[in-house]
Amino acid sequence: MPHAITADGTRIAYQTQGAGAPLLLLAGQANNHHWWDRVRDDFDTARRTITLDYRGTGDSGKPEGPYSTQGFAEDAVAVLDHLGVDRADVYGTSMGGRVAQWLAVRHPERVRSLVLGCTSPGGPKAFERDDSVRRALASPDPAERLRTLLDLMYTPQWPATHPGPHRTLGDPAMPPHARRAHLRASNGHDAWDALPQILAPTLVLHGTDDRFNPTANAALLAERIPGAQVRLIPGARHAYFEEFRDLAGPLVLDFLDRKASPE
Image 1 (cartoon, rainbow, N blue to C red):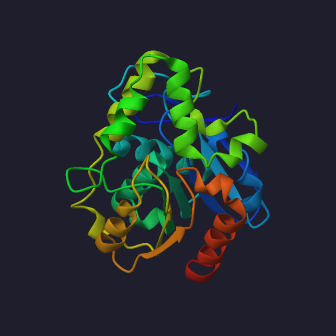
Image 2: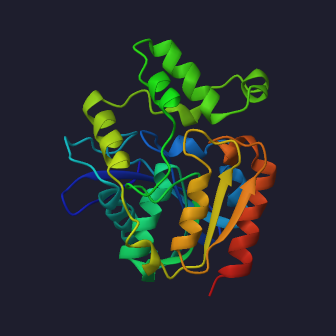
Image 3: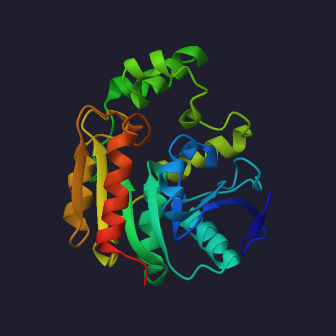
């Protein structure tokens, strides 16, 4: 597996497919590049897609940490540097959307356009999931936690016709220390004050039935990011990009084509 080396010497595995203007795809918390498996082909026909395994996941290094969304953004820059990509469209979902926020804030010259999916600004002003969801996710029964996560990601009809494996449910090979570090990184995210600095054209996507990351966060992001657009996917839960790919994928590509055509 090819890899880039970060400033602290960590190996970050990456994957490229397709041809065209570069599109960096950033996965959710405690997940690797397989998060995108079922939808990646939707973008490869028009873009050169770039994914990575976050530190702590997949074929990347797994140092003790601490980890942060800012640090994950710097790891992504290391991959772009290694590939010789000066500017890319960036599409981040869930924690990947939090990472994408910092990438756009700290490296505006590297981000041609930005798509933020099922994510939030973090911090005390963001909308948090309700206590019932928190309790279910903290169940001591691993099977119950898995059922809860599956229900938060997809409508009941989806698993019935798509038995899996469901790549959005986490990297099963992650060591415990890395899983804890990912959780702390995502929970510690707070880009509220920095969001108005984002210069890239921005599209915010969210499912209307997302309880994992409440839908109200989409409006918050759009209010904080100058000129941002919002599109809500009716009936979708957290993994809108997969279950509702026939709607979400074209929305993303249309936005990239209209707002950030290759130079």
